[in-house]
Length: 378
Image 1 (tube, rainbow, N blue to C red):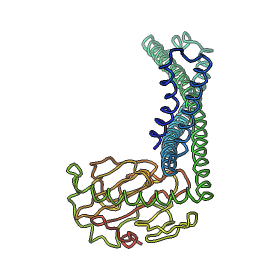
Image 2: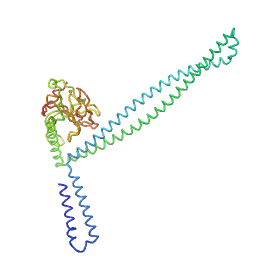
Image 3: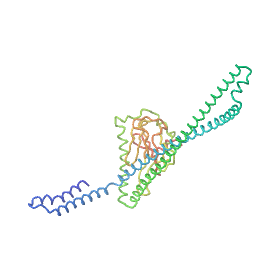
Image 4: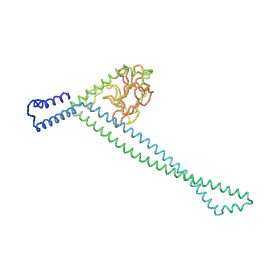
């Protein structure tokens, strides 16, 4: 529709120019400038109209994608910060160990220096000449020489430990600066996430206020549900998406582990959306999980889909064999690629930072979805 409108506007504006070309006298420069200005203005109007005509669901999907990217960046920075903090603590422990050893070495060295001071008052000559015979005097001199070597080694050891302590202190200071920089990055990432939430909340407010927009969202949500149903019908037919060859899933009724920690905020079955006032059918359950927490496989299986799916965010589909599948939607991060075989309880994704259900889960057999709650333990 937008392309047709754009062509029509250009045609209506350009047509007088084409007609004028048949006249012997060319149009004045002023008239030509006005026409060109009109072309630019009409083109801008068409582009603005096209921008406004974008569906609300497309805008919502764009915001969800941006929010997902910023959440992943935030998680990445937090992981790096945790690694830096562990390294910082390790360096501090090493520093404490060096300081303890240095203190012990200092005590030993101080005792030796006092002893050397006392022995120097008597002198090596007195130690030699006070011996009963020459051989005894030579032994005393050799003994004093060995002691002197040991003392020199003790001093060198002390100096080495002192140098290592200085280096370790510099490493700690550098790591402390790294931590400060990462903490600043975390704050920036959190602000970016908050900005995306503000965009989303503004769009949701628009949906609540405008009936037409709300109807579009309702239609979009139902279309998303149908697309997911179509996906589950088509996936098993694809040759490259080989189903899992394992078995035993059917016998696990009531014994499967929960895919995520948290409370169920969206139970299975029909429900009425309080904001849209429309009734939908939820073919899975929605679990509100802590931000960044792991979402785990409920049973061994093979990943046959792992990608962004409009209306459901990051989506993972596992095949468990015997035409059983489990679906995990609205993930902040995908941790298991297509083709990977995962074991029961294996981490496959993470819940998002946003305060929203982050572990929508569904179990189906040949595309039909019974209530998954009855299969979980407890």
